[in-house]
Every structure is written in structure tokens, then in C-alpha cells.
Image 1: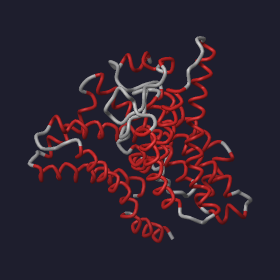
Image 2: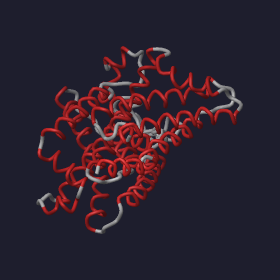
Image 3: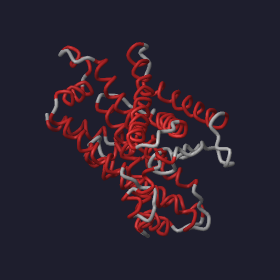
Image 4: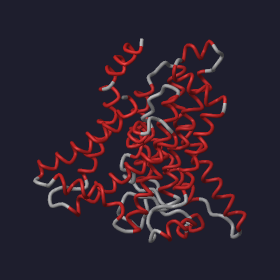
Length: 352
């Protein structure tokens, strides 16, 4: 029963969201049709859905990896914002020399620094968890607010684009906008999708192999199942928590890179439609299976794309309804694990 619990939660969440449209004098069937079909109306729409899929794969991984080590990591949203600002700042301030080596070195420097920033921002959670015995959820929530405030303050007061009235940074250097000619972007009619999609899919495959075939993958799963028994076997909690949260921060940073380097080429306040929290539903829906995250991310992206289009396809629903839909789905998927817990205990007693 546990295997199907998150999918039942997803169905319940979608059903409740459609029924909620009745309060706004909209047809639930029409709302469901928009949610289910919006993503393939055109190449551009499908490309935009794949862009959301890329971001949700990365954010799903940032939740699934710590979850395997027994951590409920909800700090991805703040790490996404901070890393995106770092990428935009470096991209706008670095001026490479007029040769291919300098440009390549600068791109590598921006990518690596952004990933390191994401990892370090997540390791703050590991520090308080290990040395202050603070709960990771409390620390992550506080950091989300802190990172959001810092990025907003820096953008508005120090990096504001003088040519725009929107709260955003200046665009990155032209040499770093190489993904404007990305083959995926071109094929999907200059949509937001980029080759970061391939990086996301490859990351899922690599992590799946590492989990199943390597010692460190076994140690992370063993620690997540029983930290005390793992400690008796010599598995270091510092290594496991540091590695899992460090990787989670890096994948959060990939979301920022997907936006800044692969899409808008600048940091915009409010660019994230809560990718960090949607990643929780993605990972839970896939039951932390790295390959399954690809499918669940695409499904959630289709729903997100459809919810965003409700503003145009309905008379009374606005884009804000997409946030309500996301909240209902996240709550339903998460709650499904607890709803079916009694039946799981009953099954274990029956087996005995």
C-alpha cells in the first residue's frame, strides 16, 4: 500500500483542486482539461514544461538525497535564491579577455563558484544539526527567510539594473549568454528550456548507479534507516550528513544556474515559483527513487504549466490559483504517507 500512497495523494490533490474551482464559478472539468493538456499546445509550451521539469528534477534531488540519510531538507528554496544571485553577480562583473580560453575559464569559474556557494549554504544546516543538536527543519526555515532577505536587499540596493524598473540585476556578460543558441532552445521555438535538462537527467542516472553500486550509497541508506546502528559500524554521521546536505545544496544551485545561465541571463526577484517546495512533492511522489524523479518532475511540471495558464483559460481564476493548487498537491502527497501508516502496521502484524 505504501508504494501507491503518494500517487493516491496526488489524485486526491488534483481532485480537490478541481473541485475548489466550483467556489469561483468555474467548471472542474474545464480546469482539469487545462491542467492536463496545456503542456502540449505548441513546441514553445512543451519546451517551457521541460524547463520546469529541469528545475524540479534538481530541486527533487536536493530533497531526496538528504531524505535517504534521514533528513527532511526544506531549505532548498533559500539556496536556490542565493546561488542564482551569485551566478548573476559573477556573470555581470567578470569581463573575460577576447579569447576562447578566457571565456571558457570564466564560465567554469562561475559554474563552480555557484555550486560551491550552494553546497556551503546547505552545510550550515549540517553544522547546526551536528554541533548544536538543532533540528534541520527549523534551521532550514530560518535560512530560507535569511537568504531571501539578503538576495532582495543586495539586488535592490547594490545590483539593480538601471535600465529596468523591475527588481532585477543587470544581464550577465554577452560571452556568458552562450545558451541563447542552445539546440534545445532553438528546437522548442526559443523557449526557456536548455541543455541543463540533459545535466538533470544524467545526474539522476549517475546518482541511481552510485546508490546501488557503491559503498557510500549503502552507507547513506544504512544511516538513514538506523543512525545508531550505523555509528556502531563505524559510519561517520559527520561524513554522511555533510555529504548529503552538500550535494543537496549543489543541486539547489543547479536550479539557479538553469535560470540565470540557461534562461533569463540575470537574477530577477520572484523568479522561483517555489521550486524548492515543489521538489518535496516531486521526491515524495517518486519515493526518493532517482530515476522516478524524472517522471514525477515532468508530471508536476505539466500541472504547474497548466495552473499558470488558468489565468488565460478561465474567467475568474488567476495565476495565484497555481500556488493554491501546488499547496494542495504538496499537502496531499505528504499526508498520504501518514494516512496509510496504520495499514502498514496492520500488514506487518498480519505477516507475523
